[in-house]
Length: 277
Ligand SMILES: Nc1ncnc2c1ncn2[C@@H]1O[C@H](COP(=O)(O)OP(=O)(O)OP(=O)(O)O)[C@@H](O)[C@H]1O
Ligand SMILES: [Mg+2]
Image (cartoon, rainbow, N blue to C red; front, top):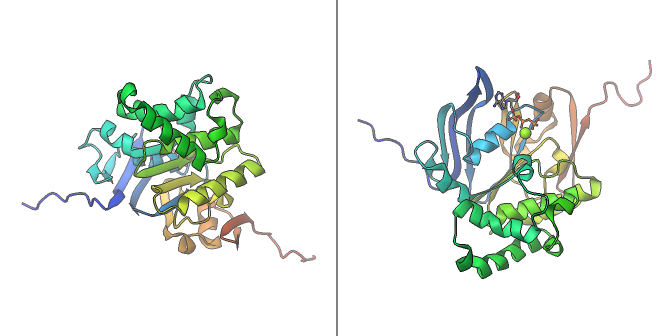
């Protein structure tokens, strides 16, 4: 009998032909995808492409309907999901919606450790408070420590949520549309912070989901383009992010520009700019 293949511990995400189906409808897949240490991925695609479904599987929040999903050297379905979750930091609209408005920022960040680890508060208090200050500082949000979450601006909330996701020192950081709802300044500030994080060799492997190439921070290394649950292209960011691939993913003709390590996309002009009848 062939031995059962063991998950490769060097692969943080190792999905083989995974699909998620509900009521006969394929949400995402089949996807085969590997994420290694030090990689920073962006997952791009239009509304309904399956990005959040893919990320929820990577967060050990959802099992695949078919295929094999290995996370952090464990196979989903063969390991207690609650053992994996403390090793994964997740920031998403669903996480945000569960936060009480009157929770203070410092409690919110410190409690990430307790919420996922079930630690004894008394024993870890000082160490965790120091770490909370560190992670808030790394996102330029330390001055918000004493504020109630409900009083923060959208941009401040996003940074605090990412700090919370980093609190447990995860091996994998998953960000679902971290810049959604931000104004231009807020988006640029966040993208810069995420760029700093991406260039930090001690930062966890990261997967960022977005609709917009403008939100890809400098230092990101890989990309996956999804459309209707299927992978249009994946691999090195520079290979994947082309006008042709984006046009296929978004089903319209897209022109892509790159300036100073950032990307900008727009719909291609239907005719030449100076064309006359
Ligand atoms: N529980 C469910 N049952 C049935 N269909 C679902 C379920 N959850 C998601 N879907 C559908 O699966 C598809 C993929 O959803 P998903 O949320 O993963 O897309 P997305 O790429 O994150 O979209 P968006 O950019 O709008 O956030 C959508 O068509 C959605 O309506
Ligand atoms: Mg989504």
